[in-house]
Length: 318
Image (cartoon, rainbow, N blue to C red; front, side):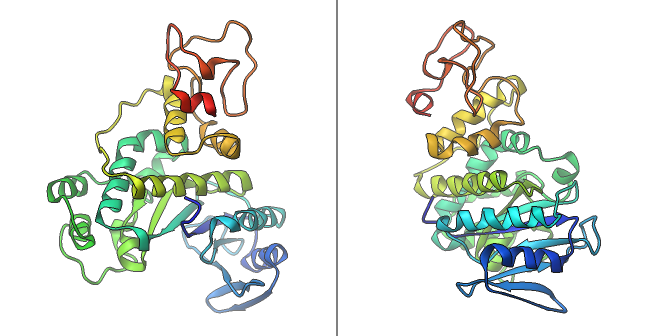
Protein backbone atom coordinates (compact mmCIF):
# COMPACT_ATOMS: atom_id res chain seq x y z
CA UNK A 1 0.00 0.00 0.00
CA UNK A 2 2.90 2.34 0.65
CA UNK A 3 3.97 2.25 -2.99
CA UNK A 4 0.62 3.41 -4.38
CA UNK A 5 0.25 7.01 -5.51
CA UNK A 6 -2.89 8.92 -4.56
CA UNK A 7 -4.60 12.30 -4.61
CA UNK A 8 -7.23 13.83 -2.39
CA UNK A 9 -10.00 16.44 -2.65
CA UNK A 10 -11.10 18.01 0.63
CA UNK A 11 -14.25 20.13 0.60
CA UNK A 12 -14.50 22.82 3.28
CA UNK A 13 -16.65 25.74 4.38
CA UNK A 14 -15.86 28.65 6.68
CA UNK A 15 -12.80 30.09 4.91
CA UNK A 16 -12.38 31.82 1.57
CA UNK A 17 -10.41 30.16 -1.21
CA UNK A 18 -7.72 32.81 -0.99
CA UNK A 19 -7.33 32.20 2.73
CA UNK A 20 -7.17 28.44 2.15
CA UNK A 21 -4.44 28.91 -0.45
CA UNK A 22 -2.31 30.95 1.94
CA UNK A 23 -2.90 28.35 4.64
CA UNK A 24 -1.64 25.61 2.32
CA UNK A 25 1.41 27.70 1.47
CA UNK A 26 2.21 28.05 5.16
CA UNK A 27 2.34 24.26 5.36
CA UNK A 28 4.15 23.33 2.13
CA UNK A 29 6.08 26.48 1.24
CA UNK A 30 6.36 27.78 -2.31
CA UNK A 31 4.20 30.58 -3.66
CA UNK A 32 0.53 31.43 -4.14
CA UNK A 33 -1.12 32.56 -7.35
CA UNK A 34 -4.70 33.06 -8.47
CA UNK A 35 -6.77 33.51 -11.61
CA UNK A 36 -10.38 33.16 -12.76
CA UNK A 37 -10.25 29.40 -12.19
CA UNK A 38 -9.27 29.66 -8.56
CA UNK A 39 -6.18 29.78 -6.39
CA UNK A 40 -3.15 27.55 -6.49
CA UNK A 41 -0.02 26.92 -4.46
CA UNK A 42 3.17 25.77 -6.14
CA UNK A 43 5.07 24.05 -3.34
CA UNK A 44 8.83 23.79 -2.91
CA UNK A 45 8.86 20.59 -5.00
CA UNK A 46 7.08 22.31 -7.90
CA UNK A 47 3.82 20.47 -7.28
CA UNK A 48 0.54 22.35 -7.53
CA UNK A 49 -2.12 22.37 -4.82
CA UNK A 50 -5.35 23.92 -6.08
CA UNK A 51 -8.25 25.53 -4.25
CA UNK A 52 -11.38 25.62 -6.41
CA UNK A 53 -15.04 26.51 -5.99
CA UNK A 54 -17.79 23.93 -5.70
CA UNK A 55 -21.42 24.96 -6.11
CA UNK A 56 -22.60 22.10 -3.91
CA UNK A 57 -20.95 23.60 -0.81
CA UNK A 58 -23.00 25.66 1.63
CA UNK A 59 -20.44 28.35 2.37
CA UNK A 60 -20.63 30.39 -0.83
CA UNK A 61 -17.55 32.61 -1.06
CA UNK A 62 -16.40 31.17 2.24
CA UNK A 63 -15.92 27.67 0.93
CA UNK A 64 -13.48 25.80 -1.24
CA UNK A 65 -12.23 22.43 -2.36
CA UNK A 66 -8.57 21.66 -1.71
CA UNK A 67 -7.19 19.51 -4.55
CA UNK A 68 -3.82 17.94 -3.88
CA UNK A 69 -1.16 17.09 -6.45
CA UNK A 70 -0.15 13.46 -6.91
CA UNK A 71 1.10 12.27 -3.52
CA UNK A 72 2.96 9.27 -2.15
CA UNK A 73 2.79 7.65 1.26
CA UNK A 74 5.87 9.64 2.23
CA UNK A 75 3.79 12.82 1.79
CA UNK A 76 1.34 11.85 4.55
CA UNK A 77 2.88 14.22 7.11
CA UNK A 78 2.73 17.11 4.62
CA UNK A 79 -0.93 16.32 3.90
CA UNK A 80 -1.73 16.37 7.59
CA UNK A 81 0.04 19.73 7.94
CA UNK A 82 -2.13 21.11 5.11
CA UNK A 83 -5.29 19.91 6.87
CA UNK A 84 -4.19 21.44 10.17
CA UNK A 85 -3.31 24.74 8.49
CA UNK A 86 -6.70 24.87 6.76
CA UNK A 87 -8.44 24.24 10.07
CA UNK A 88 -6.45 26.99 11.79
CA UNK A 89 -7.49 29.34 8.95
CA UNK A 90 -11.15 28.75 9.81
CA UNK A 91 -12.01 25.87 7.48
CA UNK A 92 -14.55 23.38 8.78
CA UNK A 93 -16.76 20.58 7.57
CA UNK A 94 -20.54 20.44 7.45
CA UNK A 95 -23.21 18.26 5.86
CA UNK A 96 -22.46 19.68 2.42
CA UNK A 97 -18.78 18.69 2.44
CA UNK A 98 -17.08 15.46 1.54
CA UNK A 99 -13.67 13.98 0.86
CA UNK A 100 -12.75 12.15 -2.34
CA UNK A 101 -9.62 10.02 -2.55
CA UNK A 102 -8.11 8.94 -5.86
CA UNK A 103 -5.75 5.99 -6.28
CA UNK A 104 -3.47 5.72 -9.29
CA UNK A 105 -5.15 3.26 -11.66
CA UNK A 106 -2.05 2.46 -13.72
CA UNK A 107 -1.32 -0.70 -11.73
CA UNK A 108 -4.85 -2.06 -12.06
CA UNK A 109 -5.75 -4.62 -14.68
CA UNK A 110 -9.18 -6.22 -15.09
CA UNK A 111 -8.55 -8.68 -12.26
CA UNK A 112 -7.46 -5.98 -9.83
CA UNK A 113 -10.46 -3.77 -10.58
CA UNK A 114 -12.85 -6.72 -10.36
CA UNK A 115 -11.36 -7.78 -7.03
CA UNK A 116 -11.75 -4.26 -5.68
CA UNK A 117 -15.39 -3.98 -6.76
CA UNK A 118 -16.25 -7.33 -5.20
CA UNK A 119 -14.40 -6.58 -1.96
CA UNK A 120 -16.11 -3.24 -1.54
CA UNK A 121 -19.52 -4.65 -2.42
CA UNK A 122 -19.13 -7.43 0.14
CA UNK A 123 -18.30 -4.97 2.95
CA UNK A 124 -20.12 -1.89 1.68
CA UNK A 125 -22.83 -1.74 4.35
CA UNK A 126 -20.16 -1.97 7.03
CA UNK A 127 -18.03 0.66 5.30
CA UNK A 128 -20.94 3.09 4.97
CA UNK A 129 -21.84 2.69 8.65
CA UNK A 130 -18.27 2.97 9.91
CA UNK A 131 -17.75 6.14 7.87
CA UNK A 132 -21.11 7.63 8.92
CA UNK A 133 -22.27 8.28 5.37
CA UNK A 134 -25.59 10.11 5.55
CA UNK A 135 -28.72 8.85 3.82
CA UNK A 136 -28.75 12.01 1.68
CA UNK A 137 -25.22 11.42 0.39
CA UNK A 138 -25.91 7.72 -0.20
CA UNK A 139 -28.92 8.70 -2.28
CA UNK A 140 -27.10 11.23 -4.43
CA UNK A 141 -23.35 11.74 -4.33
CA UNK A 142 -21.98 8.37 -3.22
CA UNK A 143 -24.50 5.73 -4.17
CA UNK A 144 -23.75 2.08 -3.40
CA UNK A 145 -22.30 -0.20 -6.06
CA UNK A 146 -24.94 -0.68 -8.73
CA UNK A 147 -26.44 -4.16 -8.73
CA UNK A 148 -26.82 -4.29 -12.51
CA UNK A 149 -23.15 -3.35 -12.95
CA UNK A 150 -22.09 -6.10 -10.54
CA UNK A 151 -24.22 -8.66 -12.39
CA UNK A 152 -22.68 -7.66 -15.72
CA UNK A 153 -19.20 -7.81 -14.21
CA UNK A 154 -19.68 -11.29 -12.78
CA UNK A 155 -21.36 -12.61 -15.92
CA UNK A 156 -18.65 -11.19 -18.19
CA UNK A 157 -15.67 -12.32 -16.10
CA UNK A 158 -13.61 -9.52 -17.62
CA UNK A 159 -10.16 -10.16 -18.99
CA UNK A 160 -9.49 -6.61 -20.11
CA UNK A 161 -10.25 -3.15 -18.82
CA UNK A 162 -12.45 -2.68 -21.88
CA UNK A 163 -14.61 -5.53 -20.55
CA UNK A 164 -14.85 -3.69 -17.22
CA UNK A 165 -15.70 -0.49 -19.10
CA UNK A 166 -18.63 -2.18 -20.86
CA UNK A 167 -19.88 -3.64 -17.58
CA UNK A 168 -19.67 -0.25 -15.85
CA UNK A 169 -21.52 1.75 -18.50
CA UNK A 170 -23.70 -1.06 -19.85
CA UNK A 171 -22.13 -0.41 -23.26
CA UNK A 172 -18.73 0.28 -24.74
CA UNK A 173 -17.81 3.84 -23.87
CA UNK A 174 -14.66 4.87 -25.71
CA UNK A 175 -15.02 8.57 -24.81
CA UNK A 176 -15.88 8.83 -21.09
CA UNK A 177 -17.08 12.20 -19.85
CA UNK A 178 -15.92 13.68 -16.56
CA UNK A 179 -19.49 14.46 -15.56
CA UNK A 180 -21.03 11.13 -16.53
CA UNK A 181 -23.79 10.38 -14.03
CA UNK A 182 -22.16 7.07 -13.14
CA UNK A 183 -19.49 8.94 -11.18
CA UNK A 184 -21.84 9.50 -8.25
CA UNK A 185 -21.06 6.19 -6.60
CA UNK A 186 -19.00 5.57 -3.49
CA UNK A 187 -16.62 3.60 -5.70
CA UNK A 188 -16.33 5.57 -8.92
CA UNK A 189 -14.88 3.79 -11.96
CA UNK A 190 -15.88 6.55 -14.37
CA UNK A 191 -12.80 8.30 -13.00
CA UNK A 192 -10.66 5.32 -14.02
CA UNK A 193 -11.80 5.48 -17.62
CA UNK A 194 -11.78 9.29 -17.80
CA UNK A 195 -8.58 10.24 -15.96
CA UNK A 196 -6.87 7.00 -14.92
CA UNK A 197 -7.68 7.04 -11.19
CA UNK A 198 -10.07 5.03 -9.06
CA UNK A 199 -12.10 7.39 -6.89
CA UNK A 200 -13.50 6.66 -3.43
CA UNK A 201 -16.29 9.09 -2.50
CA UNK A 202 -17.60 7.56 0.75
CA UNK A 203 -15.99 10.01 3.14
CA UNK A 204 -17.72 12.84 4.97
CA UNK A 205 -15.95 16.16 5.09
CA UNK A 206 -13.30 16.56 7.79
CA UNK A 207 -10.56 18.95 8.80
CA UNK A 208 -9.20 16.53 11.40
CA UNK A 209 -5.73 15.51 10.26
CA UNK A 210 -5.91 12.10 11.95
CA UNK A 211 -9.21 11.25 10.31
CA UNK A 212 -7.96 12.30 6.88
CA UNK A 213 -4.86 10.14 7.28
CA UNK A 214 -7.01 7.18 8.39
CA UNK A 215 -9.23 7.57 5.31
CA UNK A 216 -6.22 7.56 2.98
CA UNK A 217 -4.74 4.53 4.72
CA UNK A 218 -8.04 2.66 4.38
CA UNK A 219 -8.25 3.39 0.65
CA UNK A 220 -4.63 2.41 0.01
CA UNK A 221 -5.07 -0.80 2.00
CA UNK A 222 -8.20 -1.72 0.02
CA UNK A 223 -6.42 -1.05 -3.27
CA UNK A 224 -3.33 -3.00 -2.25
CA UNK A 225 -5.40 -6.00 -1.15
CA UNK A 226 -7.32 -5.99 -4.44
CA UNK A 227 -4.08 -5.95 -6.41
CA UNK A 228 -2.54 -8.76 -4.36
CA UNK A 229 -5.56 -11.10 -4.29
CA UNK A 230 -6.03 -13.92 -6.77
CA UNK A 231 -9.81 -13.59 -6.51
CA UNK A 232 -12.53 -12.06 -4.35
CA UNK A 233 -16.12 -12.78 -3.36
CA UNK A 234 -18.87 -10.22 -3.86
CA UNK A 235 -21.47 -11.87 -1.64
CA UNK A 236 -22.76 -9.28 0.80
CA UNK A 237 -21.88 -10.10 4.37
CA UNK A 238 -24.66 -9.97 6.92
CA UNK A 239 -24.71 -6.64 8.74
CA UNK A 240 -25.38 -6.59 12.47
CA UNK A 241 -25.10 -3.19 14.18
CA UNK A 242 -24.46 -4.87 17.54
CA UNK A 243 -21.27 -6.55 16.28
CA UNK A 244 -20.25 -4.00 13.66
CA UNK A 245 -17.21 -2.73 15.57
CA UNK A 246 -15.81 -6.24 15.93
CA UNK A 247 -16.60 -7.13 12.31
CA UNK A 248 -14.98 -3.99 10.92
CA UNK A 249 -11.90 -4.37 13.10
CA UNK A 250 -11.39 -7.90 11.78
CA UNK A 251 -11.75 -6.53 8.24
CA UNK A 252 -9.18 -3.78 8.90
CA UNK A 253 -6.72 -6.35 10.23
CA UNK A 254 -7.33 -8.50 7.16
CA UNK A 255 -6.40 -5.47 5.03
CA UNK A 256 -3.10 -5.17 6.88
CA UNK A 257 -3.99 -2.21 9.10
CA UNK A 258 -2.51 -4.01 12.06
CA UNK A 259 -0.13 -3.14 14.85
CA UNK A 260 0.99 0.08 16.49
CA UNK A 261 1.55 1.91 13.20
CA UNK A 262 -2.16 1.80 12.35
CA UNK A 263 -3.57 2.07 15.87
CA UNK A 264 -4.77 5.63 15.34
CA UNK A 265 -6.32 4.68 12.00
CA UNK A 266 -8.28 1.89 13.68
CA UNK A 267 -9.39 4.32 16.38
CA UNK A 268 -10.87 6.74 13.87
CA UNK A 269 -12.38 4.07 11.63
CA UNK A 270 -14.07 2.22 14.49
CA UNK A 271 -15.33 5.09 16.63
CA UNK A 272 -18.77 5.41 14.98
CA UNK A 273 -19.61 1.72 15.40
CA UNK A 274 -21.46 -0.06 18.20
CA UNK A 275 -20.36 -3.05 20.21
CA UNK A 276 -16.94 -4.31 21.27
CA UNK A 277 -13.92 -4.29 18.99
CA UNK A 278 -12.62 -7.45 20.67
CA UNK A 279 -15.69 -9.65 21.10
CA UNK A 280 -18.36 -10.83 18.71
CA UNK A 281 -20.89 -11.18 21.50
CA UNK A 282 -21.64 -9.29 24.71
CA UNK A 283 -19.08 -10.93 27.02
CA UNK A 284 -16.65 -8.61 28.81
CA UNK A 285 -13.33 -9.40 30.43
CA UNK A 286 -14.04 -10.19 34.09
CA UNK A 287 -10.63 -8.94 35.17
CA UNK A 288 -11.24 -5.31 34.27
CA UNK A 289 -12.80 -2.92 31.86
CA UNK A 290 -9.74 -0.90 30.83
CA UNK A 291 -9.85 -0.39 27.11
CA UNK A 292 -7.34 0.15 24.37
CA UNK A 293 -7.44 3.17 22.10
CA UNK A 294 -9.00 1.22 19.26
CA UNK A 295 -11.83 -0.14 21.37
CA UNK A 296 -10.40 -3.41 22.70
CA UNK A 297 -10.83 -4.12 26.41
CA UNK A 298 -8.44 -5.81 28.78
CA UNK A 299 -7.21 -9.15 27.45
CA UNK A 300 -10.24 -9.69 25.25
CA UNK A 301 -8.19 -9.25 22.09
CA UNK A 302 -6.23 -12.43 22.69
CA UNK A 303 -8.70 -14.98 24.00
CA UNK A 304 -12.09 -16.36 23.13
CA UNK A 305 -14.97 -17.27 25.35
CA UNK A 306 -18.65 -17.85 25.70
CA UNK A 307 -20.84 -15.33 23.99
CA UNK A 308 -18.35 -14.49 21.31
CA UNK A 309 -15.07 -15.25 19.61
CA UNK A 310 -11.95 -13.19 19.07
CA UNK A 311 -10.18 -12.82 15.75
CA UNK A 312 -7.24 -15.10 15.04
CA UNK A 313 -3.58 -14.24 15.61
CA UNK A 314 -4.11 -11.03 13.64
CA UNK A 315 -6.24 -9.60 16.44
CA UNK A 316 -3.79 -10.65 19.11
CA UNK A 317 -0.97 -8.93 17.25
CA UNK A 318 -2.88 -5.67 17.01
